[in-house]
Length: 125
Image (cartoon, rainbow, N blue to C red; front, side, top):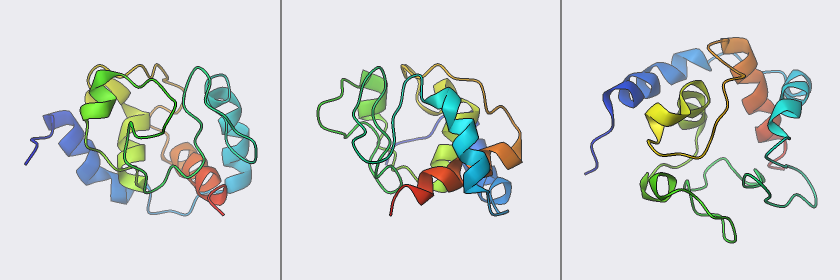
């Protein structure tokens, strides 16, 4: 069994409480504008600087064909869930050491994280 970094383990344990409130997909769509510099979502989305995020929830990290992930992401053995995404958005390099992800826009604002995850989940349909 893979041992989790201590900070990631703490963030993961806290994540269900942090995302217990339902997010607002419309507010999350506005937040996603800052993610759109690197990621795309929705019909016709393609990977560019970052991987597209269609079908993200439930997908193993580093598994999207055609995108060049960091070695850390490929070796992470994470599956993207509300909890793992919450932890990753809060502290990407603590969750996946060596990740190429460089984003600090969501911070610790629980509402913004819930809204962004609600928007991404709305794109799963």
